Length: 197
Image (cartoon, rainbow, N blue to C red; front, top):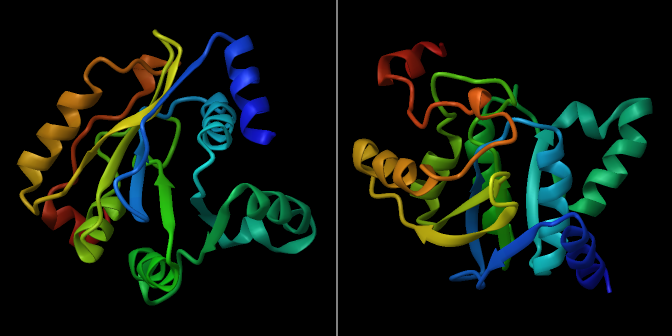
């Protein structure tokens, strides 16, 4: 019933969902571009419409405390999972452990990490995909065509230039709500990652 309602609601707003299934029980879906709060609403409705258990992560503080108690419960119901960004093991290790415990787990991540334009993407999804040898779904919210979905799944090779070129080519015609705020599809230089800049 929820899937039918989500499809109806998206359709009433003029949106179409493109989805032909996932290639296996586990994987990572990166959502790009992400420039508006509306992306979460459209993405959540699309998640319900395809009726696949897709999870997302948020900082642990959103799930705790007076305000976090209510918000955290909602986020958990919607598929949210907390990650402690300050934990010694790091987010990638925490996510890897979380995914390894489950039989079926698709994780949706925004590699931009923010709605404002950045000169690079975050690399967490990339290292997680390599570590666990998982497919990466290239999910999108295209405001020009009013289409949301994921139809392409790729394997990261470890050759960053080649992998980024593949991702860049796929998203070349996908238009954000605020195109000028879409981040560059690039990674920081390795030395900058080591310094944490």
